[in-house]
Figure 1 (cartoon, rainbow, N blue to C red):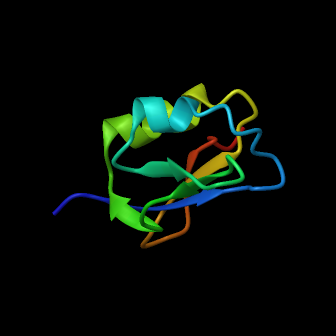
Figure 2: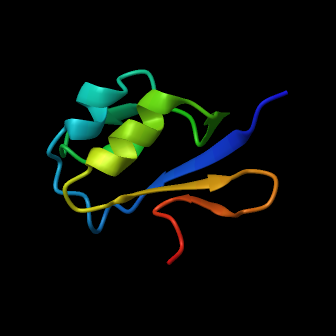
Length: 77
């Protein structure tokens, strides 16, 4: 069984660029205020969601391992 991720979007940081939706439309959506949110707060680990987090121009997306809370993105220094 693969890793499960918790995905959060800091809506105070999100600028609504839509990059996350372009990279992973199955994982992210924009609401009527053009703020991003995960379609599901927990998901199987997947490359499109990670690519979306990495491509966010303001790093508003946080991904952690569901089981441990260990950061996936952004990585700890």
